[in-house]
Image (cartoon, rainbow, N blue to C red):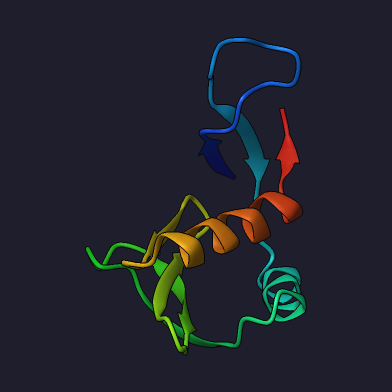
Length: 99
């Protein structure tokens, strides 16, 4: 299962606390969600960076670029573009369950 912490505020709360999301990232749903946001991506099967597990590498092709490593236990988003990062996070949140 994947857990995503988001910096959004709880509705009706004056304190900023992370929201907790739980679930696995279904690649088909994730790619469909990205595409609906106008983000083109390709998927490559690989091993994790430490070589311990299978991973799906989602390449965001541009004009801004990102690499998303999806495993059974975690999802890592790497990009230097804050707006693209926010869109990717929104896509992931759309397919996970809020706890």
